[in-house]
Image (cartoon, rainbow, N blue to C red):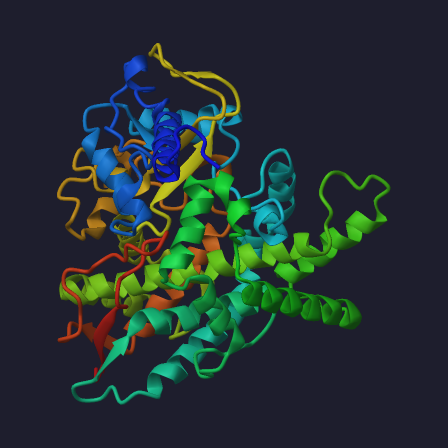
Length: 511
């Protein structure tokens, strides 16, 4: 049967060309959206917009957005396109402050979202939308207060002792050994989250078959498919459900689901209290079932599992990455390593060699070192929001329309020489009390800012600092032939991740 001509082949060619022309105009009809509004834009490519390098994993999402940030130098914002969707990357610190803090009501939610049928993805605190997000945030906020962290710290020191045991298993005398510190750091922080959130001693540091560590590797696998899954949630959320992408794999979801319920049921049976995440979830579950007004969020089932999932994923990966990046920079800067070690040793003299919560919090140079690492290597190198209602940009004629995705390049501001001179230089002195007072707000925000600031920021920093104290008082870190200089950031990861790990020479200190 012919449609147009008496030749089937010609009909097919005509149909193909017609469909292509239709698709072309459909995918490009919003192009010049920003030019029409007087906004600088990056010239888009038909069908993919400005997303090509990120889509094919030529550049990581953080590097891609940092490039756009640099392209827009001198402008408060830059218009881009995620496929056919207009999107605004904002650069001006005052506007960033408006979006994240002052005018939060216009930008309450992240643009990222999971598939509607992915309960663990949609119900976790990171991706949940308002007004349920606000309710859940208020319920979970007490988990990592200073008081609770002090109570947890003894458990954290026990994990630090396991780190000592693990390091002692290597022959670090003499010339030492070349060790992959990213994996060691990940085992350490995995054990930290397991004990502080789940009340479990999993000891993945000294147990190569620990299920928690296997789960962590699965979640943050540096594969092209996993990158596409996560990239889609942040930049193409409308296709996530159609393609069946999940926040966690089926294996990881089942493991965390079983682990949480086993611990929760045993905790309810025994009546043991640990003031950890599981105890808090038990309280929320009990209050929910006893309340006559159930509200809009069910504190049971996978809604609870979702919170353990996001605390686990956010808790171990961010801290382990920061710890290993700090060790890398200390390796390249032995004078900073020596200065930090001396501060730690002087502090230990005052506590008779005991590592205490107050000691960790008093080490000023340690805080500066970690802050500088987070400037150079922000773990999630961008923030995303979506506009809830038309928003007029102050001191401008621009109106950001409802539903518009908003992006902020954390790494862009962190590497902007206007705010941080010689941005490639590792310099903890940027974070001295004097220098911090001179700096504008909303140009340094490795944990985000405003109501959406990372809920686990305190315990994350505490884990990193404890790990550094434990490692530096007994070991010296130097470059080896396998140390990648300069470091390469993996283009296949949504978060800032070193490609090929971080391999350093580690020697036991003799004095």
